[in-house]
Length: 334
Ligand SMILES: [Zn+2]
Image (cartoon, rainbow, N blue to C red; front, side, top):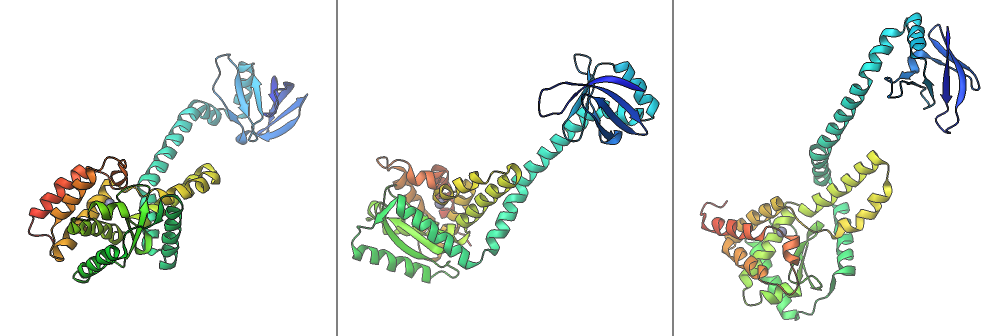
């Protein structure tokens, strides 16, 4: 039993007039093109609006069949009707379901598994890798945002000594190194991987008359170090890039985002909250209060000329000030 059909190779638009024959579970075409294929490997579409039906080969070539009655009789005669017919009816639903399931799995991996895996990797990161991350970030910042500090040596030394004294009075202070830089981003302080805390000249100058407030801002940076916020974000960013590369096969995106990733020092609200809580405890242990951090944030909030640099790297300031005042009132900070 055979019917007429049009064969397209899937690569060119050329139409080949052929005769389709089905025998012993194998479909074969002959005429302007010829090939054979087991029926089980063919996919049959539902009838299209033009009343034609497509039979697709595994390599994307397809047959356009107008004689549907002849085709149905042919399938019935071969005993393959059931499976083919049920596939006809369910193929689009199955495809849609599979696509939805795939999207759900990807979304789940993206939202949950990826951050967890990234945190795990960050936690196990050898210190040599972490210090290289720190070096690379410092170099990127020095190249784009920082110049050598113009603060007087005595002022730098006074700040260092005071901060080290406070750190000495609190057990478990993370390893840190204080660096001063003149910046193009105004008053700010940044905690980099492996323990560098950068203080901008502008911040030291803004808070020159309130050293407790400056200590409080640095304590907040210690909080970022303690929770390793930036390391975790860098690893997470790299993981997202790598996962995107695996999914979409595009490495150029990952390579292009790495330098920006290094300079994107923005923290999440949650990270800010964790760093503030750490700072509040640390300050209390050193005989200062969380209110000194709130006071510093109010001063930083008032800085308009240099733009919202501190706010963009440490968001949610208003919320933080309120929370810090509450923390200051709490006597049970442990
Ligand atoms: Zn922060």
